[in-house]
Length: 221
Image (tube, rainbow, N blue to C red; front, side):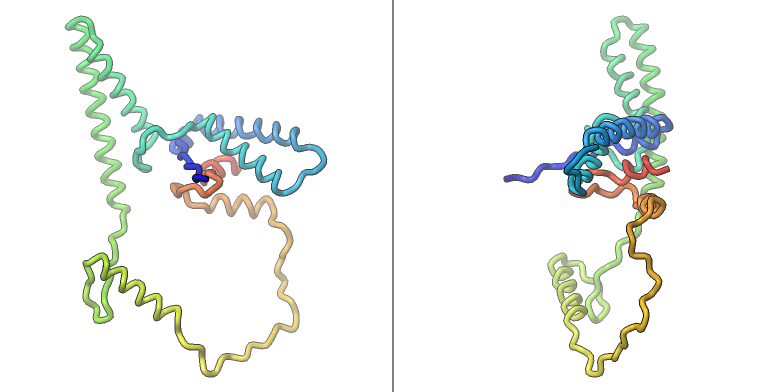
């Protein structure tokens, strides 16, 4: 049985002003529908989780849709709109019936094309500035290793030495605490869950549930 390939959602559209509001409204309606459906006997944690997962992923499909192009994450919604506008202007040039229409469409296409190139150049420069330089792999003698196979062997050697150390001869005798520490081990509060969601890094690949971090964060007040 083959694995189901998860599709990425257009989470970049949540940067738009209107998209998060639409997303919240659709998600709220989904949750209400599932709440009414599950409001009965035989409800357990698994069925609740399936309902939450389906509510979020179906909302993503409805409000965000799937990515049709593997564009870079740093391309903003405005730039994507300009790229689409450039396609439309190019189509207008190709479908112009008269010379006057073609000249007008060509002028509009040229202007939009300049705007797209300017936006892409700027965001590309900003993206490159944020890239961290790769740290070279070195041998024990401090020499840089450039061969891929030798780099892998060096990593194996490093972790073998790191993780296979001998047991200490005189292990410390740590006494058990006389009293338990005042740690709250009860269920997490809504505030704690909201804080944890807000601290999730955006732009990361979704897990097996196919729920992007941006979708969770969009619904956190």
